[in-house]
Image (tube, rainbow, N blue to C red):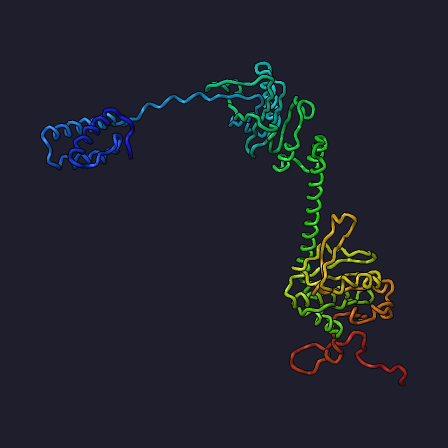
Length: 476
């Protein structure tokens, strides 16, 4: 490392360099590092020199070494400069008072109210000395043990003081406040408010910025309906804030519905185990075989028709579960159609759903009107179409199953057996139910309950409704 510019050192190095050149050695820079200079001096003294040159080198090195001894720093270090006094400058400020005094830790409502009244009197005394044009005061429950006080002051003239005693005028009952100059709205109040006072009302004494409200909402200090009411007074940007709130409310509503359904499913888990096994239908097995994952141009639609409480919907669920297992997909989509002409398939996800159940279709011709979509051709379909297509979405039933259920009250059921397209079983596979789709448990016969004379100790049972013996009252 090179040394700084020191004239006395440079003069000593020049003398050394003059002698080094006589000896044929390479000189060093005037500000060369101390180690290089000492190394060069050792090399010079190792040569055969004239007595005058030896004396010149020794004298110059003594002077050179002396400059370093004089430069040894004071071990105690240089005196530290005095810290400059803190400067306070603001025109709007928030003061926060925390104290362990008896009044601040009291649980008596009357004593707390008296403390707040004294605080208001204290703030009134600041009004004249500081040219205060607006005051807001709040007492909050900071913790279960104590309260704290907030004061927001808006001044007509800037407060500009320095020194340790600059904030002494803000002391309240011996408590020094935490001072936070205002850079935003200054309304950073939190907690359960006990008492409030302000002569500096928003929208009258000062303008309110919309982003103040945004920050308060994000911090959880405003409820959504209060936020919208205040945002409407601000007006600017209200449409976007209203749309954001409504979108959040719709999303929360959907979450509550989903959570309610999942809770009911969890509660009925035991009932799911009690569901009776389904009967085997050739039409169903043929329909499931069409969804083995192989590529096909079209796939038939399964239509299940029957009266109420025969298990049409449960059979449709069982079929889609089996197909989901074949396609290695977790679930399926079930929508209620009834008399609607449109299918709400915005939630259909090919990566999650093995197919769709059209439950309670109200018209058999519904399948024919939507045949290009429901037969699963490899094409993209756009749903919710309109003039602007703002809310449109794309979907496809390619390689996915479609099961439709019909009650006997649906319209045009005979078309399933008479219409040229609907009666073609390559288009619509029909399952017309006359009995429940599940296997009913067989009831025990009377002969099975009669004691067979074994030593198992069972009592003899009689079949309900059968007499113990036949009595002939006509015999004499």
